[in-house]
Length: 302
Ligand SMILES: [Zn+2]
Ligand SMILES: [Zn+2]
Image (cartoon, rainbow, N blue to C red):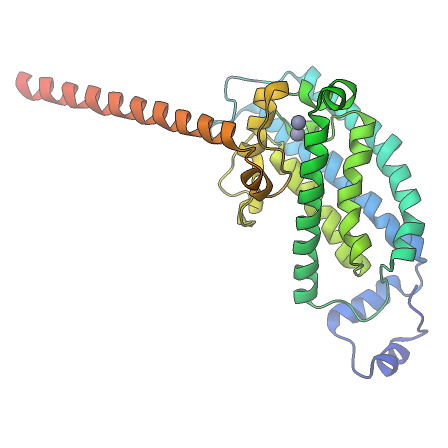
């Protein structure tokens, strides 16, 4: 709750006028208890988990030609029963893991120093914090993911997520509850180490879940906004990890690709990509030769 009764009091305390964004924030949050502001995260996670995957799941059913061009495993068409199973599991994970997570995170976030009042952070501050949180999240997630690929981790926990060999948007959180809980730690780590404003906190959760859904959507769309992230892995990168499954010793990173590069766990993926490129080049060559032969014979006939 903002500790000023009026906008004028806030301006007097800040020693300057409120920006339009700050005035809007004052109007919205002045009388709102802090725990309600933090509960917005739950709403963001609900929207992200239930609403964002919907159009992507519908693509799976309708399969329009424009989308099928970008499907990473075009021969796989998931049944509605499979999509419904993933959706049901997402609801279960949301209610049993993510909501309690939000509840217990409140005291941690408060003690950690998440700000809820004024001033609002600048765009530059938000950008730097989001990059820092992404780097922390990516590094910790990389090592957690590698641990989950040990014999114990895989058979006890991670095998559930790898039941999905052709990812689809609703399968993002299709995992053992312990996996969802443990992967929450890297997401909270950045804001706990370097506290931010609650608006940045919301933004971070929204970006991080959107990125995870994009990586699991099963399509490599050229207009995917996550492609703007430098050294980003993305859908193609993570799809390979699911395609290969248990045997995969590649592509453990969640956002970037640098950990897999540094620790040499992108070799299988590079080899696969090189082979796919060779096959595509050969097919293109054969097609050009065929067209050339047809053109020659038609000239002769003429
Ligand atoms: Zn894995
Ligand atoms: Zn995955």
